[in-house]
Length: 186
Image (cartoon, rainbow, N blue to C red; front, side, top):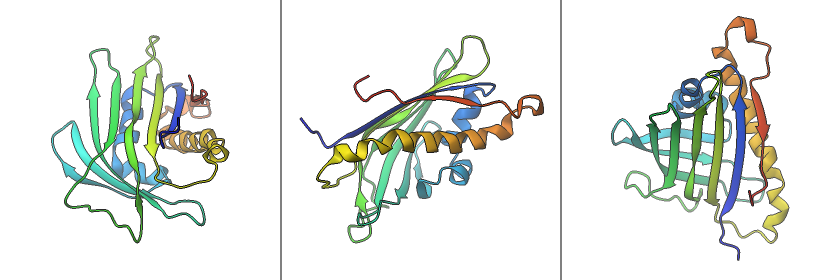
């Protein structure tokens, strides 16, 4: 049964980069707009508390499709073992009504990151999960699923370039990420 949700899962292991640094680069919008070229006009709509806010951004769609906008609650937490989580879900907000002539509002069921320190104390493991309904009538969505792992590779490559500035000069030439994109059933 097709639920309309496109699911994407990626697993990345970092070398020499702490969970705190990866969290900061993913969470801090002022930093993120410099490396995440998929999200445009990224902004905090409302800060609810230190762990919860509402964010907005839009993403450029392929030719012949309408650009997609996202309005999401964003929750961040640090667990007792040092694991950092960032969780996104679609919300409605009076300050950002849908703009149907310019965008299609995508629906995020659940997306986010689990950033877990490696037991060795060096580096971390990042699990990314995205479940979105991009609200598209595409004759064969299966044909578009193959580029999703490629999208993840580009995303994490941009993230890698950003976090490299946090490396000590002695390891600056080391590959920061080891990337895997499991099949959607795993």
